Amino acid sequence: MAIKKYYDSDCNLGVLDGKTVAVIGFGSQGHAHSENLAESGVNVVVGLRKGSAHWEKASEFAATHENFKVMEVEEAAKAGDVVMMLVPDELCADIYNSQVAPYMTEGKALTFAHGFNIHFKTIVAPKNVDVIMIAPKGPGHIVRRLYTEGEGCPSLICVEQDYTGKAKEIALAYASGIGAGRAGILETTFKEETETDLFGEQAVLCGGVCELIHAGFDTLVEAGYAPEMAYFETCHEMKLIVDLINEGGFDKMRYSISNTAEYGDYYAGEKVITDSSKAAMKEILKRIQDGSFADEFIEDSKNGQKKLLANREAENASQIEEVGETLRSLFSWIQK
Image (cartoon, rainbow, N blue to C red; front, side, top):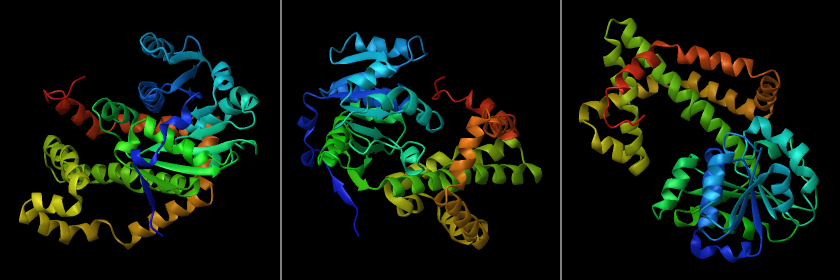
């Protein structure tokens, strides 16, 4: 079954006329969603803890936009007809249950940019509200930058619960308001978005890529090559290759590299990513699907994030990070 695609011509931003969108959080995604929506003419309130790190930044934007206000979380949740939860996954359920849930009255829309909490049922929405997702496929600063440049970041939309009969219209309008309709809006489900997103992060984009770079770097250094050379060949050039793939697929990447590199690609790739690698990926996917990963992540969050912080500390102290920091300081095009 082909995935459904939409653009601005398929969206009616007027669906949000007379409504208030409450964005809970002003981090990477929060600032992008709220600022883009406001500049698209939508009435926006941002819910934050007064005196928090983001309160001043949000207030600065509010000073120049009449349709943008900053409020305490409870006040914003009460004011919002569409309430978007843009706080970290591990904090979302507690913030929702204690500060937002009391104000989710009949006919409102509860929205997310990731399906984690709804799919794994850490948040259970009331039956008389819409439950939808608008998930840009890019970091918040990219969502914001592309919007200001007249472009947009592709986005997913999902409808989990359609109480009003207008949930999809609201999702499309919201996606258009943040600029996604300029690039493309794809329709999926909470289950599919959550499980594929977590799998991509763990097996390929973050876990897979970082461990591959680590292994390549360590192999060269252990063989006696200079750490700086190892860094350039296994880490620095990764972005150049990925940019080519992003622009035109594997074909453009292979067209752009040398024949030597392409020949080595076909020879070596399947030796590194073997049947055992794919078996590990299937195990990773299984743990996502059955909720084991979510349970472990939530338990670690409740335990002060001990595992997360220990791993972060170990990674930050690794040789590749030390070498990379030194080399990046020499790159004039990287701004601190």
